[in-house]
Image (cartoon, rainbow, N blue to C red):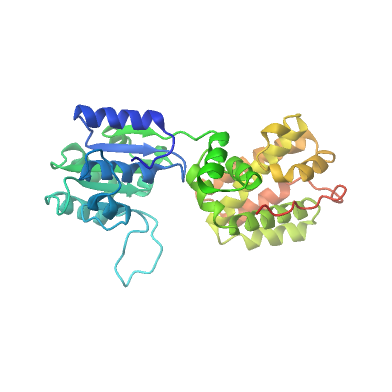
Length: 346
């Protein structure tokens, strides 16, 4: 049984190719983080190596070993791939050595299954040398070898690599469908399922992982609390906050994306579209801030947040990006009414 949730178009194409016996030798799975790219890749690996009558059965030895990450013929290459014991630095690219090792392993026959499957997770992190090295294998693949490239940022891949793969784009799921699955299949209560379904932006895998880990929602509340305080803070406090985030690019990007969603909600609230709000547990705070923020202030700060994300993407000086952003935040003398935080969703 396929584990992939939703994605009817991609599943239909793969099933048709399998039935017709004309599966491509290389695929590019494109989609947001946690949308199901790895799940689909492992599904295909199970189908190709399944020992049951209706692959993927999920019950045979081969399917179980792939699920457990122990199958000798299924290799996952990523920034988190095992490194030499002496190398403790976080990797920033998939190197040419990773691809040369892939090529060597691809030249050998399957060890315990029917087909070798190489999954490159985060293909956008392939170095230029690695991507060019991979081209030869994609163009002239050995028999019984399938290469699957997974990416959230297709534009960062070499066009020559993209052109030699069959492209499958994984689409976001409707929030109502995610909410229903969380409640019916995983027993998540209505309020929490509804909130996570909206925060997931169509990525069921993200919603499921957060449903069992309350730390994300707690961190989200803390970051939004800090944002509220900045609206009434002086310049010194704002610049101190910018300095605090100057050394953590990933955290800074997450914060800006979180703020961007909240300010979009603010715009929707001011325009009378509250039913489309993502941060539904903050509707009371949104209604109170609506009274003191003008639509032009909201629009201009959304523009500033988007520019900040673009600057981070091109590796701009992080502290300078945040200091400029601090200048753009609308400044108010005091918070409206009793803009209290919502009760934690459990």
